[in-house]
Image 1 (cartoon, rainbow, N blue to C red):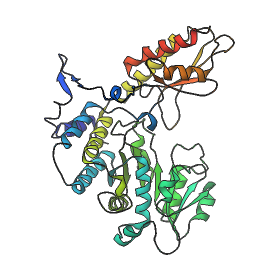
Image 2 (tube, one colour):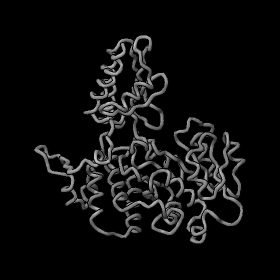
Image 3 (cartoon, rainbow, N blue to C red):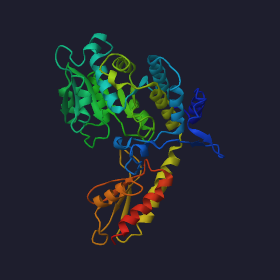
Image 4 (cartoon, rainbow, N blue to C red):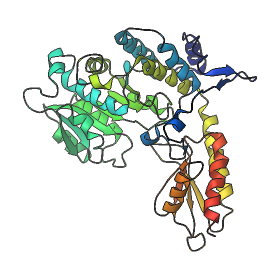
Length: 399
């Protein structure tokens, strides 16, 4: 893993000069102060929301740091070979992630399809041209039961999905038509451990793929699955890493990454429609640099403080109870669950969710029939008090 000093040095070497002007003027503190001449959302009849749900695609993932926008603005001002840029950025990302090769995909779902295509065609240009209509027996992808997610990204490559329960069924399902073994990292169904999955794949010479789209933090997960032996891994670019929402990372075995690139834009292949522009490619690289270099412990403490602040405010309402928890895999950050006695507080959780959503400001949250939940991932520090007092206001109005 690169040291923080090395990463900062690499970031400083990027030719980003001249990319700041569009962001705004420098304030007295030396920080960039954005200047917007138009409120585009207001023009379109939209309003932004305070995001207490987390890195969900329907709320556009995460917010990019200014340095990422600087990199994207730099790229927007000149031309470059997209093929060369893909390769050079892939090399830089591979260095940062201690793997053989890497590429920027059009999100994690795109990475699933490109990885599948790579295992079907290899670097055979004739197969790349024909996919998904290759002659001969249908190719197969093996996966544990409960891991069947975003299946159209797999089947678009013409493969058949074969679900298995346990290591023995996986061994029995693999045959001469099996091109890949697919693992959904956040699945609660763990009939096959990651270690067993990788071991069986190696035993039968079947590439293994791990879909980890929402699974950072913690930062170590960017490294541990390749170290465990998976041939290919994907992470969303626009979630925990805070890169462009329409970008992702696909990395691992060099021959498979090269085959995935050949199945990708700008080539006339199955991935042509998954084009990633030069701005997003460069922005994704810089986002990863920033993510690896940041103080993760400090960020975690900030989330903890935010959850504690909301809990301290809403707990003053009679019967309100709060519980803090951290999901094991995806969205592994502090969450705050809020419950109450509806005979004391005369409003249901779904009604609170609606009032938060359609109130001023608009606040998005998680929850079900019996609770509301705040995911601290995307809440800005300055929004925590707003969320706390608005939630309290809604709850206590029916006491």
